[in-house]
Image (tube, rainbow, N blue to C red):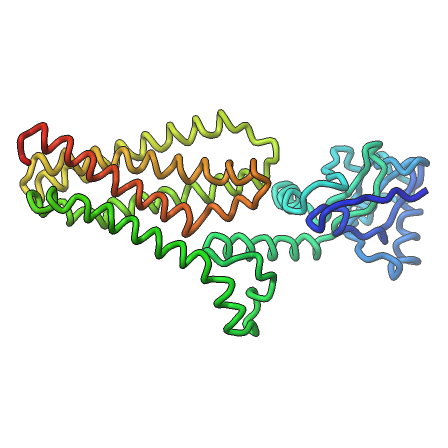
Length: 333
């Protein structure tokens, strides 16, 4: 009896083909060659021949090249690859692409819990999935709403569709920019005492956004490819990396400010601000996608405008807080 699977559209089972060449354990290469020559037109793909037992349990895979390089009297089990790369019916299609690309194979067998083969995800479907996921991530990271559907991925999309897909995050960005402007306005007195502080706002914001974008890309890719991602160890590693990057960049900008502007206090303020803002930006960009995933939302939503907005506000708040603390301590203000 055929097993019915209730899965989402992104599950591997929805992308399979069952018209593939099967042979049984014990058959010879000569038999396989005759099968391929006589029934090739019945198969959707013939990159590989799949070896099964009488219960349809997948036992091995043989490439077409290996078949035609072997003697017709050789048994299939003698040359088949027993190290199987497989996925299950409910495996996310992104994981299928990852398995194919990392193992350099053209098709991924889909098996059930008893390792019986249900079909394969062929190479053309793998490419389609890869292209679709790549576009989706690019649009999500750019703040283009996925709710509009796939219409925004074509050049034939109407102006209305494009506006609807892009406007929500941009409106949020306006509010975020207003908050950032309010943060700067709240520290006008500090800026009036040390006007050079304003000169370093762009570089601090840029550096926070840059490291945040890197962290966003890495965590979203890790979530997509590793459903059982070890969160604690991953976040700890990212924190160590962030601390190292922040220390190097903070020291560098501190020297530039101290000697370029001949202001020792400015160098200390800018250096410490960059150190803390880079660490905070990495944590925001790493933890936001993890939080969205826990809420069963697409982690890509946390990228682009949303994380950037929060990071920018945090960077400015850190900068002026550090400035007030240090300049007040040194009696500058």
